[in-house]
Amino acid sequence: MIAKYTRPGMARVWTDRAKLVTWLRVELAAIKARCNLGIFEPGIFSRIRSRARFRVQDVRIQEAVIHHDLQAFVDVVRRSLLPALRKYLHRKMTSYDTEVPALALQFRQAGKILLQGLDQLIEALRVQASQHMWTFCMGITHGQDAEPMTLSLRFCGYLEMMVRARQHLVKCLEEIEEVKFSGAVGSYFSITPAEEAEVCRILNLRVRSAATQIVARDVFARFLSELAIIGRDIEKMANDLCILAMTAYGEVQEPRTKKQKGSSIMPHKINTILLERIKGLAGEALAGYATMGLGIIRTWLERDIAHSSVERIAFPDATITLDYVLHLMTRIIKDIVINRDVMARGINRTRGCWASGRVKEMLEDKGFDPEDVYVFVQQCAFTTMKDRRRTFRSVLLASKLPHKKRTLGQMISVRELDACFDFRTPLTERLPEVYERNGLDLELALPPN
Image 1 (cartoon, helix red, strand yellow):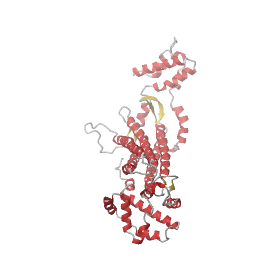
Image 2 (cartoon, one colour):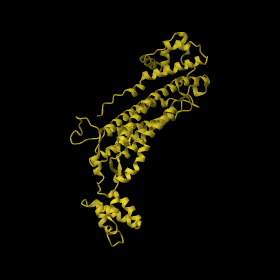
Image 3 (tube, helix red, strand yellow):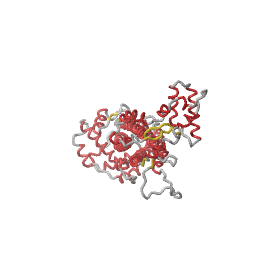
Image 4 (cartoon, helix red, strand yellow):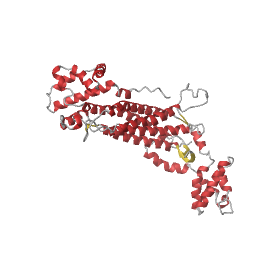
């Protein structure tokens, strides 16, 4: 059953306290780096680390006075230090010498949570794909019944999307962990490359090859865009399941609680409320944050703060939203009700018309004119669709090809025609290669439906 979303981990990454703790970590790393390089006396770092303190409320009060959050933080921390030590804190640093590495550390935490969520969804999809290797169902293209397939093949498609999404997200996070610690306008006028390298080593980050006073925001725009793409992938999954849950198909049903209600006026309805919630959040909300991300790329020359206000909204909201969506979709995939009998019956919704392609190929192989064959098979299929009392097979056998005096049943053997309606043999022979590529567990496979 779907439980309430109670995972606060991602929200904690973006609290004011978490941000200030990370800022202090970077400030201390800068002092330690300078001690390691002999710029400061060896004991300075330990003396400052043991005394450096702040209260979030004190920083807020100071910011209300000076209207500069980073400087307010530095002011408050300096007050906790002995007067002789205060000059070492934030020495020769601009705000983003602190904020760029700190933001990378926050993204490292957020990324770890998102990757865990992706891993859980990937595993849930892999289990379902393994279980339903031989759950046969009707493939649908353009909203029309096409040819039989397996439910596993659908899940493999989703699985492949999520595996690829994880790879791209890792790449985005790696780019964000390339940072700067190079002073105002990034020119190393007051800070040396050696100091930058040592700070990055201490924080387990990497030096960006070039930066201005800030890191170019395209790396964050790319991250938000990747979250939006992942969201669209999940929206595609949710949309597919919503279609299959429609009354007309009834092949799946999203998890429900025992006392759950549907429509307020129509008690018979089983609304796909969770999947539709995902469609809104994963599709539209995350796409909106991606659009915001594109806007932050445009900064003036070496620095302006137009991007900052946007990032304070987009970064927390986008990561929290995707974390929630991953959590919810994983639970849906794990607990979804799959009506295997309905899927099996659905294969014959068009009374065999799905075999039109194989019948066409069989007749062409027997030497009949391809254009005549296409017209013949299509007319037989349309006749079957209109006359629900007849099957595609019976219509074929009783019909005549263009320019032929005899019916198809008089020109070919019934056994040759019946072979065209065997979908299990080719699927069971060929799909195991796909299943192997996706790392499915053969032991979990259910018997054919």
